[in-house]
Length: 546
Image (cartoon, rainbow, N blue to C red):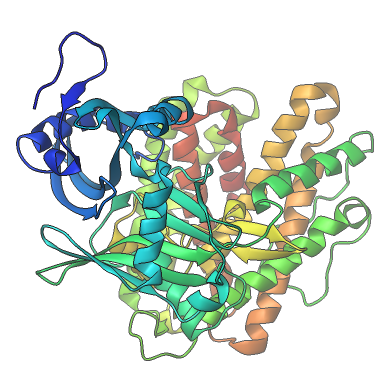
């Protein structure tokens, strides 16, 4: 096996995929991947320098010259992560087409007994896409070096899959994972970065589909798990039903806000922007007058989303014998852990704000100074929940964990909730931990805030003079929409399981703590990535201080 030195692209002389998965071929593959990985959209450590890549395990698809490969990546700081790489060798006209359609997916050029070929991301080949689906459809198995890849279909699979052929295609939306769509019925999510244990998206999807029978998600249809000889298991793929939709809630919100701002741009500013959402939520809607006239459709949609969110949490609290989903009461240690986590986030965010203060302008400077000046007050608020009586704080259940408008689809005037994987940067144990449902509520309320000001920023680019009149309208929209969401959420919870969330004032105390944590996380992100958006989380923190 050799690598040519007279061309820019690596040229390897091999017989098949098996030559690349055993020494000395694996050594060359590992070197190639150091250059290949940082250019892939699903690779999550682009800011780090890869020091080494090691092939850990693989499973070959019989007769397809392809394999699912697991690699361990070591970075320059000696941290590591494990990734899944479907790899295949393709020749002839198919290789020529892939050079045009997916050049970023090509790892190397090869010389094989069948002629010139390429080594590339295997999901670009239809026979391999079908082989991955067949693993689930047949409850099939593939041997690996250290164990077995095991496919498993759910009880809902047959009815949704049907009998027709389902050609596959690679989706374009995901960043941290890769989606394969089969016809208009199925969607397969290949998890790229892997952690030992069952992925929360798979675990929660199975529970909501088969145990709670919750209809407002993409139905769970199956998964593929790597089971090692030592008994360790790792989820590598999940199959769901494909939901017809009109796009995600984030884009729909921006579109509705664009229409809202256009309709009120020439009106006088509202005298009253309303109050921030709070428990106890009013039983009757308070969204009347101009806000109802100009944003009535979205107010109703926010109330519906509040109800669907409550129904999701009630479904996750379904009585069960499964210990991973049994609802549990809060303890003092739970509240202390929450307070400690928020305290740490606060310290990191305020340090970053001090460093980035000189780069801020306008109202951002005023808000930053206020936030830094109220440092002690913020720490006091973050720690307040640690000294409260845990019996008053409702139950801990499995939650969505990364809940925002981009995680819901608009579908026939309703919502479908997606992506229960949790925040990808957190450990698997942290993403599987039981938490208060109000953490999801806080995430959605912050998403409404982001929508209001992201749309206002976009409006200001084209009509800057009129946009000056819209700050108060943005505040009114955010408060009215958030209140409608919280009102409908509270009504639905109270009607079925009033003990799931705290009663006032504990509910408000906990909600404020989670809103602060989320806004602080956003502040840190925006300081590092988008200076012009720093004012959005700062405004949220200032509101909590009022």
